[in-house]
Length: 461
RNA sequence: UCCGCGAUAGCUCAAUGGUAGAGCAUGCGGCUGUUAACCGCAGGGUUGCAGGUUCGAGUCCUGCUCGCGGAGCCA
Image (cartoon, rainbow, N blue to C red; front, side, top):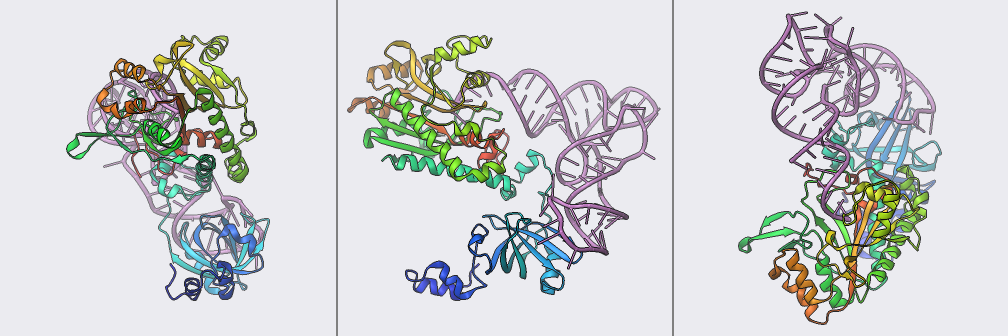
């Protein structure tokens, strides 16, 4: 975009330390580069904006256009006789999503979308867009998903993805500020981590098959033994042929793992993190949540302590609500909803029957039928957003568990080493990013919470 | 894998078994404060595919394809 001979750029390269960015702009005004979100700093000044046509309206001798530049919306106005003839005519050539520049003096204007307006003194068309498929009217979800690469330009998607960004940022903040090490787990793995889910398989040179990871947890445990406290943050893959609104085949998960933590420490960590994430979203992304029409009353409740109930107590709640639930089963989607409806904030359900949980979870010393596991159920029917446990740290117990689950011991030798060389109690959990964002935004489907969702029947765009 | 629903103009949707239509989008014209602007005119269709019933099928029947929602499974 910038010419290498742009005087502003040259100054920037020569004395970057001494000349603040904006003072460089003021010298070459009105050609200064400004983003719409910063217009409040430029009221009364001439600026040049670059972006795309969001919408336009015309009325004989007056023209309105709305530009978006990725940071916001601003309205440009042109009146016949006042605006340059050429700009007035160029307006008519602009189609939705055409790229262009406009220059003019910024003013506050209540009637304008975004609150600011510009009397257009100059307009430069960069490219006249072909007929844009996403019109300002309603569209079906499938049509929009086929055009996801364009749909990302709309205000609703901006709001959701900005909340997603904030969620990820606050998670990193949380762990980084507590001295956790970010440990990146591999995507290609030699075998199942949990032994239950269906995995995506791919050929791996002469070494046979590799599988896309379904969890970085086992590697996180190695990290915890090396660094004390770590978090794994990356994409995970599940090949289940599931087609519900709570499922993606590719999703992001953050998985902290802490040496010397027991189940209670684990729950303390989970609720502290959850509080931080939700309160940060409320603090920094309220305009976006308003755009989405989110009622934030329930979110404001997300403060410590979160209620903790045992699996047995959850089963009691189900029975009291007339649900014929059999002890020993895992909670289904509707079961989770019924349990979570009893509380005004996320609820932690701990000590599940070991038979429905993964092989690596430690048994409850008080009751060998129970695993020291915890799930966090989000309110309002959003279901499980966190699953975690204290891990089995005893070599012999873990060996027995691997045999019971018919897992190939050879593939887990490295994992067993963690129990051979200075094993200690440790615990961790995984938080699903998309489910968390979906809950915070109040969406009815996970697919809008990730830029390019991967689902059983969708691999494009 | 199972259960339910759906597929009509570029998009969103109408149409008792009887001439396939509206709004938006597109093109042209009008309008000096619009807010998914508005008003007028115009172009735009192998009704998902293949059979069948019928004088006549977008509509009824059979099969198929694709999609959506739910169950199971899961974050």
